[in-house]
Each structure stands twice: as C-alpha cells, then as structure tokens.
Image (cartoon, rainbow, N blue to C red):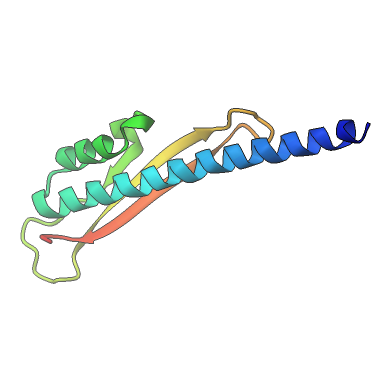
Length: 115
C-alpha cells in the first residue's frame, strides 16, 4: 500500500531527472556549436563556413541555417574590440510533456575578429 502512494512521486522524479538531463545536454551542444561557429567566423570571415561549422559541431540536433544567426566581421578590422557573434536558437521538445510542451534554448558565443 505504501508503494502505491510513493510510486507516482518516484516516477515523476525519475522523469524530471531524465528531462533535465536532456535539456542540459542540448544546451551544452548549443554552446559548443555556437563557439565553433564563432571561431570559424572570426578566422575565415565567412558566414556560410561558420554555419557549416556550427552544424557540424551539433549533428544530433539537425540545425538549419535559419536557426543560426551570424554577425559578420568588417573587411578591415581597425580596432581590436571588433567581434563576431553567433547565436543558435533551438526549440526543445519535452518527451513526457509533464513540464510543458518545450523550451526555446539559445547558444551564444562572441569572439574577436581575426583571432
């Protein structure tokens, strides 16, 4: 009888831990992908190469170009403070739907142009 009272709580906790782990893993992938994209953009000054690099770093997420925002480096960098920013937006969907339908996660990286 006691197990019948405790089982739903234990199940909810286990599912919560699973969902949190998936969100944490996805956020880590987004951060790494945006960092790779920013590094590529800072060195090559190519938005296409930056997007390709970011997608390659997070192949499990199947990112599209529309989800990756890249700010370009100027052709001639005159001040060392000039930087590029890569922002990846991803709509995360929960498996269990116990905590809502999903979240919008973002990975953002800023890097100085010309490395």
